[in-house]
Every structure is written in structure tokens, then in C-alpha cells.
Length: 390
Length: 239
Image (cartoon, rainbow over all chains, first blue to last red; front, top):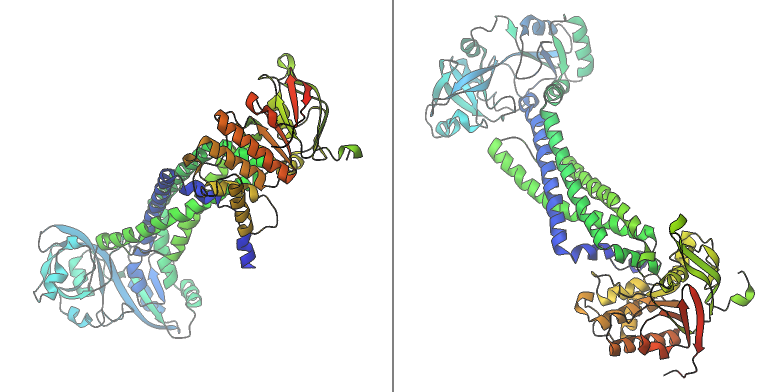
């Protein structure tokens, strides 16, 4: 059957029209690839931002999270009474809790002496904090006051902390005006909100931020007994606790943060707009190319109609030109996208990678772009009057 | 069919009129043409420019709608025929144009195959084979892969003839096929056209200004001011 299908093919006119005009083809491909790269970049940045905004959120070892209703995002955390977290222990499903302080402090680069805002998390070193054991293994080091664990994935502006520490040197610097010593390294990763992270004990945290009210925390982690349904316990706790605290499941906690960046800021809109611009630019280029191509070959299309070809068949030629352009133009855009993502990862440490959904989305956009432009260019075919060619 | 006596004629026109423009600008180009062409006949049509030859050719070629009078081509009444019916008639007609009108981006072989591709129910290989066969028949068997750009004027016109014949037409229409060619080449092309059309049993209607090729015709028609007259029935043997 496939053989008979193959044998029913005709002269590949669409391909020949494109390939025998290499300059025009190159311009078209450059335009389409450019549009594709632009879309990959913008959407990659957008998704990377949303993913990066929850780097820390994902790591917490918690089933439920308590937060102040006034907390809008990780960069504007408000405190709530720690009593609420302790109250939650009354629920049978609750296994254990961890009160966590969350705020930004100024970190002085030990080399350049410049200060920069860093996210500090404070917790009781004996409590569980993250799913991975990297903090728990080193948390005993924090029992001594003035000790911190530094995130070695923090942006380089914080200084060569990891290098010096790994070289066996004592790394001491000034945080919020006080001397601290780095007693260990962890791997968390920066986000759009925080360029770097450090973890310390509640005692050190309070000495760095003496204005933190006693008995107030920013985040309360709750771990449930196995077999409990986080959704139902979350609803139950929210009903029992006063309105000065909000109960999230961990997934809701992550979504809440993402949603902040998505809706409360213009960032998501800007990047989506950037991608839309790429789309429009691509449309214009492909339309120009195909319209020019149809115009140039109008007498030839008219000749084919005079020979007995259907208008539908000729429209098909233009549509196939669009399809071919989409496929050939997408490949370099994909390759360039991979390369640029690697570049972004190494220079900004944002978790941007070629997600299959995004690769598919950009391909669909390129396809719509090329086929849509082809459809507009087809209107020119109506001018092909076979009566004019004699 | 309108009349059973007409079925044998490839072209049968009676009182065929055609006008361009509207209102006071309306200009009548064809003033009542009566003509009949039988299968296998090679008919030449001459006349001064602007006398309506091209209009008549586009009407017979089913490229325009018939306004007034009767016109049956290959047994199909074209008066009142819709675009789809006219397209199906066009499939059965081969056309050769003043300019060769080859597709610039296709090789000679592919251009001819564009004609053969219109034949239903044949495999790609068969249609490609047909294209090669026709190019060999017009003496271009060694130029299969050349683009029109690389062929001479006479070669291009021969490719156009091969393309027209590859669709196995029942009628060939040619509009000054020698206009762009020098005398000797023009003569060769027309003789080739006549020989191949004869072999196919296909009628030929050729518009020409070229006095050197008039002798290839079975019949010679002349048009003037939108009217047709038969010049003579040439008595000649196929050469």
C-alpha cells in the first residue's frame, strides 16, 4: 500500500520551487529560525523564571506549609504567630513540624567587600528542613552561633566562597553587619527572587535580624503521618486555626509562588509578549517570501491551470511550501535554542532546558506561522488567470 | 450532446460572438464565428493582430466563458459550462504558448512530467517514463536534466510541445509557437508538432503570423474584424 502511495506521487513542485531559489530559501529560513529562536528564548526565560522562583520551595520536606495571609511571595514574606504551628500538632494526622525564618539579609563579598542581598533561612538544627540530606548532614555545625551553610550555586557576585571553602580556608564575612563563618556548603540554586541562599540556626538568624518579633515565623513546615490525605488535613487545619494563618499543601505552596510571578508581576506578560513578537516577525517574513514567490510564478501557475490543474492543487503547492519552510526552519531554531539554553544555564544559573512541551509549542507556533502566511499568500493565486497567458 | 452529427468534430462553433468592456466601452471582438474542425486535422489560423484570434483560442481552450453563440469542444457544449466543467475540458486539450511558459524551477524532464502527471491511474515511474519518451520524440533525449534557463529557444519550445503531448490531448491549441524562433528552427518545430499530432490522431489549431509555415496546414483559416473565412483547402501530402 505504501508502495502504491509512493507511486501516486507527482513532481515535488513545492520543494523544487523552494530549493531551486536558494537565496530566497535562505532568507526565509533565516527569518523563520530567527522567529523560532526568539520564541525559544522568551518562553525559556519565562518558564525558567517560574521554575526558578520555586527552587527552594520544592526542596522543603513538608506535606503542608503554613504562611501568613499577608505573604504574597518569597520576596515579601510576613510573619505569623509560631503558636499556630504548635497548635497544628493537636491534629492526629500531624507527625512533626519545623518553624522556619525567611528573610533577606545583606551579604558582604569577602573579596570585593561589596554587599548584596541574600536569602537567609533560619531553623532549629535538629528539625527536618529539606528532603535531601545535604542540610541534615551538616546541621550540627550550625549549633554554634554565627555559623552558616552557604549555597554554592549562588551567583558569583557573592564572592569565591565555595572555592575558598573547598580549598580548606576559613571563610568569614559580614552578614547584616555581623561576622559569620561559613561552616559548610549546600546546593540549592538561585531564583529570580534570590540571587543566593544561606541557611543558619534560628538563634543566629535572630541575631542577624534582631527586629524579628519573638514568637513570629515566616513559614511553618508540617509533615503528616503516612497515609494521611494532605488536602483533607489542610482543610481541617484551616477550619481549626484562626484567620491569621493560611494552610497550603506543598503543591499549592509552589503554585502560589509561581502564580505570584505569573500574575502579580509583568514578567510573565513581557516574556509572552516577546515570544508573540517573534511570532509576528516570523509571520511577516514568511508571508513576504511566499507572496513574492507566488507573484513571481504567477504566469507559471496560470499555465498549470490552463493545462488542467485544479486551483486546489495549486493551493496545495503553496501550503506544502509553507509546511516545508516550517520544518526546515525549525531545525536550526531548535539547535540554536539548545545552545542558548546551555549558555543561559552557565551564565545565569537559571534552570532553563529544552522541555519537550516547549519544543512542541514552538514547533506548533512555527507551523501556524508558516501555514497561516501561506494561506494569506494563496489569495494572490486568485490573480492567476489562465485566459491571460495566450 | 446537442446534435449527434457534431460528435465527430473536435471543434464546432456557430454564431460565436464575444465582447470586452461594458456600456459605451463595449467592443465586440468576435462577430459570429462558424467553424468546424475534424479529428486529426491541422488547421492554421491567420489574420492581422487585434482581429480576435487569441480570443477565439481562449474560448476554444475553455479558458473563458462563452457569451453568445454555440461552441462545442471535444463534444462538450461550453456555453454555460461552469469552471469545473471547463477545467475538465482543459485536461483534454494541449496548449502551446507564444512564450514557452515552462516552469523555470523544473528540469526539462520534470516540466514534461507536469503534463504526464495529469493522467489518472499511472504510477510515478510510468509517468516519468512517458516524460522521457516524449522528450526523446522531440529530440531532447540528452537534455533531460537541464533547466529551461540552459536551453535554447527552439529547445524550450520543443519541451513545451512534449509537455502538451504528454498529457495525451485530443486537441492541440498553439498560439504563434514560432514567434520567438528563427525561421529554420520555427519550421522544424512546426513540422515536429504536426508529425507528432498526426501520430496521436490529435487535431491541431494553430494561430500564426509566420508565412513560412503555412504549407504545413491541412486547412487555412483567416480572420478579419471578428469574422472567419476559409482561405483554401490545401491539397498536399504529408511530408
